[in-house]
Length: 316
Image 1 (cartoon, one colour):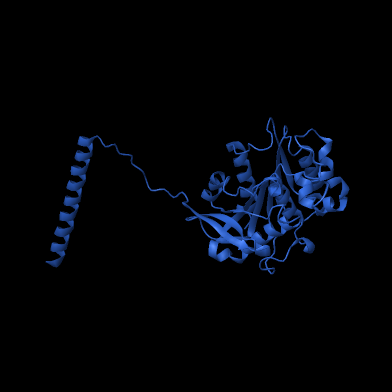
Image 2: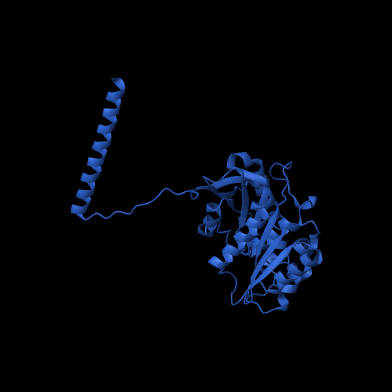
């Protein structure tokens, strides 16, 4: 008897629900309200966590912004993005500006961090490299909290950010370039590097057509090392990622526009040639007709994602 009553009640609820739905649809039609039907999707929703302080060198709070896929299996590979801007010569990094393009990577299952570093006005090289390595250590230390696989980490930068990304890739294990910020028991090594039009050997830059005088004492490169580059060869050598290349460096993807007048195209050729000579896995793309930037195009972003997929997602 009780079972029959429960069944009857369930049928009644279903009938009322159907009637209410039909009545609502008739009312919408009368009012001219249109409907868009959507199906359940398994695409990753992305959580945005801005302004996470990861380090305070000299009481300067350094921030990162995280994109975290909600539904991707954990732990997830990590991509650290370094926005360029002349190492902050004219203004601090615009760390929010590339977030829309990075969402694509978070949707495909990566935790993505856009990371701030000190400007060349605030501190000279290698402070900027110390900061990026501190950010890497911070994220590895908090890997469980953010669902990160600390053994599948990629670094990616544009312009001066590309320079720092390349340095992260070639200075793994170089103790004097680690800095003292963060949990030093965590290593700062990465498993893949993407360098977008980053400078490498500052002393060679003035040999090519450019929009600025690299050798001037107030050029971004001179400001970074703390003096005119042609008068400070040892400091320039220390800031050159080519200096530290060894055969065990992680794979590199290098991309550079052939009409770049801010960082000469040859700068990437120098890095690519040196990596190949050392038998480091490296690929380079010339972006025909591109200047300094303008790389946020699907074919370019998809090439970057394919590279990270090959070296981070398939690396288990």
